Length: 318
Image 1 (cartoon, rainbow, N blue to C red):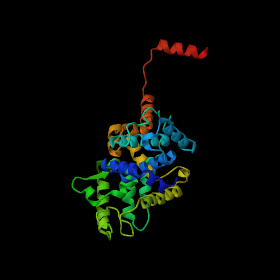
Image 2: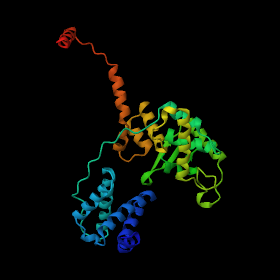
Image 3: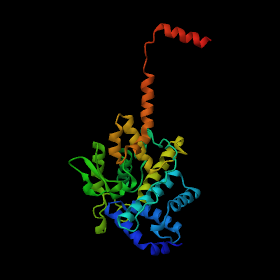
Image 4: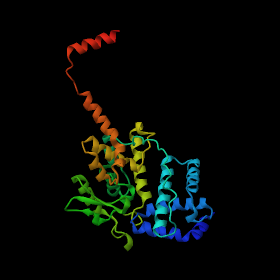
């Protein structure tokens, strides 16, 4: 079944789902991802009515997702999307049942430690930024590495999001949720200079954009990623030991979180600065806390009574 057939056969259901996503304030990226997952599921139904779908139909689709090479995490995302889809269908009286409710989630491998840059290499990144729009690109790297912004958040920044007097930055993150990041003096001054050197956009739609491209429109995600890629290439050339590491723009955000924890910030503070809705997402950085605990315990020197030490020596000899 082609996409055009899916859109035609399930036009009402897809429109209702999209209206719900927009009304709930989901970002365009999330809307696109959810609609992709739902269309994939509807394609599997091969024309079967949404109200007639059974638990076996959903499980069959999720099995196909796994067998196509997707991991457990993506399979579970598809399941969550279909569950939300049916929640919306029930709300709008398209059906009266949700066939996903009794389906168990797939087991997911424990998240690996995130790749991050040590502080000296993080600082080196700012020194290695190069190009025609130097101040702008340094500001982009600095906001990811020292304020934890996502690529999409960099793109969406507007001039008015920068509070000149309050020295903070308002960031519109996932789920259309705002968070407010206090800026250290260095970042505050850097953004001031960036705005002063900013190229005025040539269209009204982008007039408030903080970061502007050479084409005088709001900078794109791809351009932000290119700035990061060029910087990492220079980093690897300068420090060959960095070659082979999976470096990306998002790794700067990981580095920011790791640096915060190393300097004593608690998980709740890191969660708020990163804009994580659930603290369990922030807990991927607990490897830093584990290292701190190990260092702390290595400094513990209990005064063990001599009689116990003698027993220990005896046991080791026998």
